[in-house]
Length: 341
Image 1 (cartoon, one colour):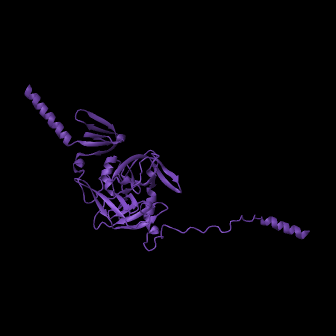
Image 2 (tube, one colour; image 1 turned 90 degrees about the horizontal axis):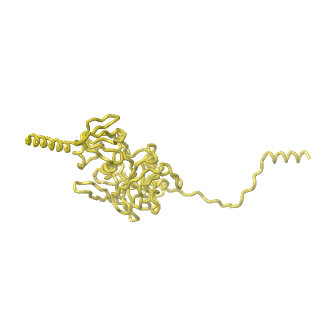
Image 3 (tube, one colour; image 1 turned 90 degrees about the vertical axis):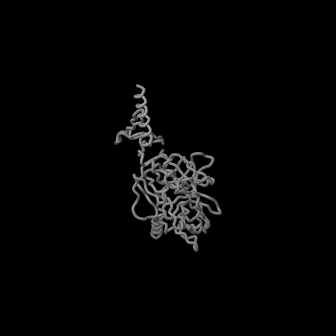
């Protein structure tokens, strides 16, 4: 009898060890996770064997299922960015990239796209930015580099022992547009390949949608802040912004605002320090138009006024009130009446 119990216990222990080693991870909305063996997955339900019980989850609550073989390969550094299996990247070379991404957690997105966020430093101050191509094209705010020519971009690369910083001082200004507060730069990586972020769509935004930002507020590198979209079309000083509760502090300017797919849906631009929850980002559609029409805003070192600064029209010289206008028909009738008399 005792030998049978010992045998049964050994079998049970081996079952749990194998189950733990091969457990799948079900990622739920809100960031919660469930680990176990997925017995069934369809459009209505996901059934997970936890070992001691079977859990039935509505499919509408499941963000995605991470198989055990995906978990074993996760976290290994790659020299070249490979899109996840569920995404399709836009074909052909262009200045920015788009992709079909699936929603996931903020933690997962920060791991996947955090290396695309950079720190932009100049003698006049410090801000953030993000790469949009693997060869070093980078977006930031106009006010971060306004009036500066000596610019340094710091990239944070993840290694087995943590993050390492690499500074790039060969940075070329490609285009500037003060009216939408955007700047496009090219980092000379001397053969290095950069991690980059994908651009999303503003028309997919909804009020209340969860978003997050990565930047360098007050020089605190790789800071992640979370919030929601308060409104997607807030008018302020002649521009439209995405209003968000995601914290935006000095140093965040120029960094990306992400949705849960990991797409950039805005460029963090400004926030009220003493009024929490009032922060603003430039919509990604504005960023796309700026990049596509970059030739119109091209920066020329010999003529820095070209592309983004224009002469104001001359002021009014004669400040007297204009003479009262007369109706031509009435004046003609008066002349005819005078002739008849």
